[in-house]
Length: 341
Image (tube, rainbow, N blue to C red; front, side):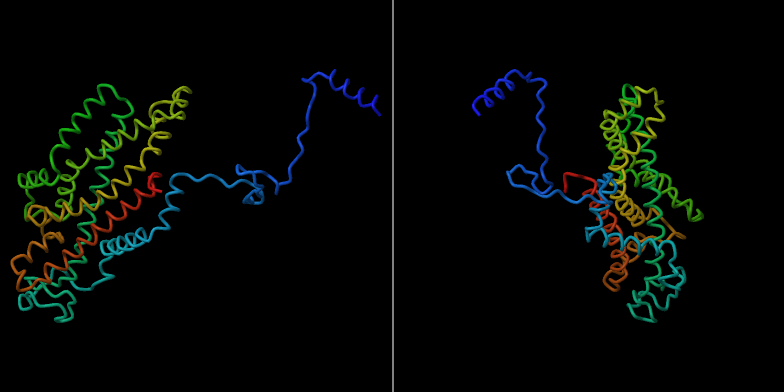
């Protein structure tokens, strides 16, 4: 017995350590140790044993949005206003331009008018419903115009850099120094709308004014986002493979730079609606035949003590619309920002 043990020990000592292999003892799945020293059972894999696929930033943001009650509340209010703008006949059958002086400033409930009548005897509820079309049209068109112009300039400045970036940045600073509302008042006072102008021309003029003073904010945001994205490895790899600048911008930089722009544009949409209402309130924005909440508020000021409901209901519609878009923008911003989770 002693001799056999000595022979086994000598044989082990003469064995080359490099050729010695130690086979690890397999652990049962239920005995996998954790950092605390306890055994744990691995989680079941989805799809019949396959690992769950990863989620993109948009999918992850949508999962966050679905759990937020504020998102559904704001989206519901916005949907109602969109229906008012697209199909106002769903809410009222009354002609908003028809008025009778005999029912001027009549209170709510008179002759079936739930919001009463304005100073010209027109149905206030019908004018509030039809006013959503002009306000939302101005807000949406201005948002699209500022996003396209500002996003394009910010993309060019951030991607190419150099003297082009310096030139566009200085131009952006010059325009950004002018407040949008003040610039709109100066522009609309210098080139006012005429009584014979068409509905579309009046709307386009207001959109153009707001776009001129609204694009710098989008340009700054897009430029900073592009500068951050173009340093990523997949962009450098595309350049190394010889991809053209146009292909790099369209396929790699633009899709990964749009998220912050979309969030800010959603918030700005409510600000553009408020700016349009302010210009119309001052009498230099939308005019007849366009129907605007700002114009309705202006017309009701002279009768605020005799008929306060003429001021209340257009202001309520305007406040709800602006608040809904700004709330939606805040919720979307929180969903796209990982630091807020």
